[in-house]
Amino acid sequence: HTMTSLSGFEALLHGRVVHCYGGPFYAGWGLTVDHFALPARGRPTSLDGLVYAVMLAYPRYVLPDMAGFAAAEQVMHHLAQQARGDGASLAGGWLARKLRKGKALAELLRGEWQAGKT
Image (cartoon, rainbow, N blue to C red; front, side, top):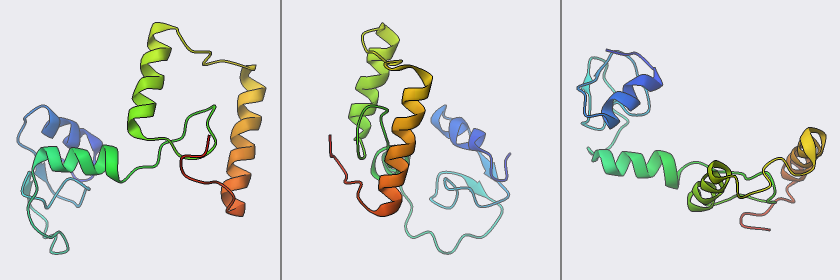
């Protein structure tokens, strides 16, 4: 039972029945027992469709050493490299990472950041 918690989404991923008393992003698609009307949701979708939408199609991912947005596959590859210890995930140290992020944010706010730019 949940109102807006992400734990309800995790429960769906584990095959649990989820009762929603609020309007979290995963409610209203025919995957949950909804106790709150959500008329704006269109047609029902599958769990695979919802996962695709919320993990791949909708979000924008950013990698530390990449200017622009990264595809979910690039992020997964980067995380796998970090787990193996292959990448220089701490290249340049803490301050250098913060400066790169600040520069990327400034470019984004000025409208100079382009998707897929490396």
